[in-house]
Length: 335
Image (cartoon, rainbow, N blue to C red):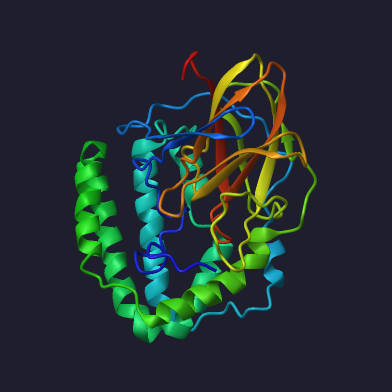
């Protein structure tokens, strides 16, 4: 698995806990044969409000009980209480953020936002088990992280949504005082990956997982990749020895000839986005947020009228899975 600096050393910023919508990757422009036409950065700034319903995915993530078959021991010792405090503080802050931002992030309510973006229970159990083994080394830093998150949540709850940027800036400054990566983080992440891997990956599935017709908009499809199976390996994948990530494959048809922009903006984890020429066909395009951005992988592609493509939605690595959203828009001629 990958040991990313943003992984454990920065509060294990997994997507369910950390949402960084202000970070946007560039678009990868391709012609119909898949040749790159270059990269240009997307504009910075606030995320527009997202609207529109999405079709129901054909697959559901596994229940907590389905994940109970892992052979990794998940009963943490009492020394893991610091990490539980960190998890509780993370949930509290996420709820506060969702109260303020659920509409601009495209969720129906603050509670829907929280459920889509929070760290899942099976992941919490794996992390608690990992922390119990390394609590002596990692305890002080995670105690510091928990206090920073609690302070951020209190700040938002007290000052209201208008002060959320200042609250988060103060939190980030406090986190930087908590210390950096240690050798124990490697063992923590290895344990966590071994525990979560079978639950995250699940079993292979067919193609497609969903059919959305010729829809356009900011929410053409919403689903959860956890347990969906690793069916496709994209060319823009990271160069990990044991790369794997569950994926969902969405069948989509171009309503007219033209260039279309595909994006996973506002998904809950670090994403990869690929487009295939039908199920099992050649890869027409691929974009990755490269491990340092949540959601936001985007590419544009020239398509013929009624051309059917398979859109692959997956994570940057095995611990990146969960709520994913696909947006598709027609680009003006010449873009």
